[in-house]
Image (cartoon, rainbow, N blue to C red):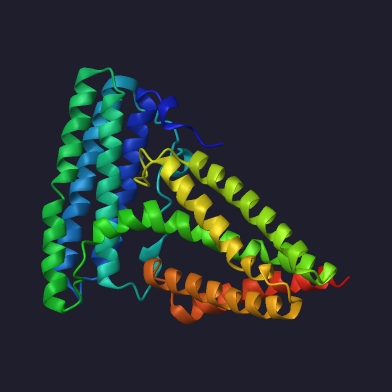
Length: 319
């Protein structure tokens, strides 16, 4: 079971901070080794960031020993609610340098936010001062990001948009919206088309589709809103994410439900099938555009999943 951040006491906060600095230092070290040949300036910046993280860890460890002794509780980011789940992108041999810069900025933002919240919950004055200082130093990593930006510009790979802002937009709007759209578009295929083939009546299929879409939207909206308060992860207000996820879930289901307002059953089926193809195409494009998934790969995944659910609905409806 994951622990809530608000339930952690001071010695657990310090132990978690030590674990975060050790993990970030290893990540920056992996980035430095990866780009030492192709982007030496970027590699140098990551090497310096690794040394700074090691210094942060040592200061935190010294403070912990002074307060609580040598025995550290075993606690990691994945044991605490609210942290962004980091995919091990540093294991990718074809990792583009612009993707690394985006990941580094996200790490800095998340770590700074953690220190700010941890300092606010710490009663010991010296510990609070240390956490505040580390938060300021993490903010100073913007200079490293600037060096990475210059290296990207020199290599011709720099993007015109602000990567960190785009990352927040993806976390707060695109990600919950995409989850909802995929769930609404794919999961409602089976009940809608099962009802359509079972009854051969457009109105019956419409009623089932509307019920499934609205029910799924409410369920997904609450699930997203209750999953994370956004304080540490930077994913924004939970009710906004829940509203986006719920609305997109409902929209995804209603899209291929509305054609069944057409009284002619065959015509309604043809229109609904075309709408499904459009929905799967839109999902594939969003995943490719914002989640950086290869277009062919995401098309195969989304279309295959949709086809299996559609086939299940057809088989059940004709049973």
